[in-house]
Image 1: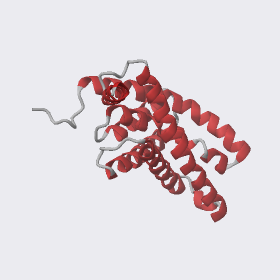
Image 2 (image 1 turned 120 degrees about the vertical axis):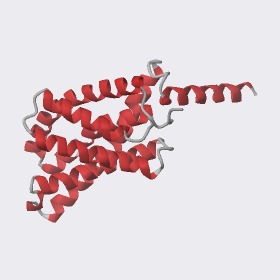
Image 3 (image 1 turned 90 degrees about the vertical axis):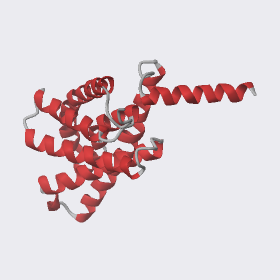
Image 4 (image 1 turned 180 degrees about the horizontal axis):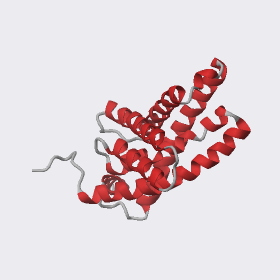
Length: 202
């Protein structure tokens, strides 16, 4: 008997497909981020960082199994390298730490809750991991404590709203089309509709 936590082929294909799309978008987001950072500095750039956590949260929200957030982020990072990133080492490290951060937040709830607050926390954990990684990797200790604190705050906000809320909105929109009916998210939404219809008939 297969473990309910084991990924099946359909889930692997969808996770990989979504992550590849985000990996391509991640590369474009890097260039946009460089422009924003040049204009607004590291704090403005921090508001953009949640986007780099979205592959992990979208996939985890749809599939709802352990390891999905980390694997999805690593696939996205690998894709980003294949399509043209020149910083392969740092991209892989960031992909791992971001995915691990998002994964840890879900693990705190034993992978049983995927409500919006949990997804927002997952995004915040992912951007926190991002902050810690770039702080040491890129020497952000050179900035004053005020700028560093503001940058961290901006990244946590981005993790909560762009990564957490934004990922849920994207996945829910996909689910409404019916393409995710065979995945956990689709089954949950179908059950919710059935319960709502049953209550309305009482």
